Amino acid sequence: MDYALAVEDTPETISGGTGVLLVHPSTGETDRIDTDFLSTDTDHFLVVSTRTTAREVEQKLEHYDVDREKATILDALSIERGYSRRSGEGVHYVSSPDDIEGIVETVAEFLEGHSGKLRVSVDSVTEMAYYADEERAREAVEGLLDLLDDHDAVGLFHLAEEVHDESVVEEYRELFDGVISLDVDGEVRGDF
Image 1: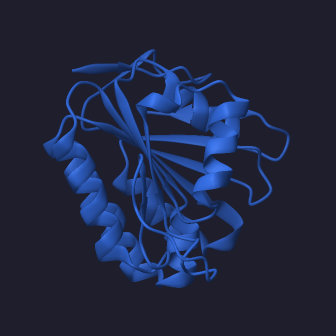
Image 2: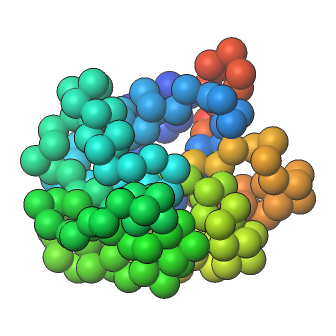
């Protein structure tokens, strides 16, 4: 199954099972790329948010006019910040961004529980590495890429470039079929 990819300087379509790495400055404006990715040619999507709360994700989706009915959100931050939360109505929670097993399990459940064209956004791998460590974050990414492949889905994984050693960024680049680089001026470059 092919998926449209509505991001400048990238192929028009990518095949199911493709993971795309979004490398950006830590202050980079990634919302437009993320929401374009999620809203195009999609039946259902999951936002794995280790950087913002579910409420902030909902505000972003609303601001960019993305269909909330298609969305499931995994919030890895609210409980960590001390808010008591129960899953329901398209929002799920794990205890913190270092709950790697919980994150991978929730993504698996989403992919198994939905059909059609499925997209996953992981915002962000950098936060997972900050809370867990580089090795566990990388294992999570590898597990998520395997799940995308198994379910013919596609994913966009955010990585703040300057936070990681150059060698770590290169290792991540090698894991992915496509890399979108966003520079500080907002210029986008695709490498597929």
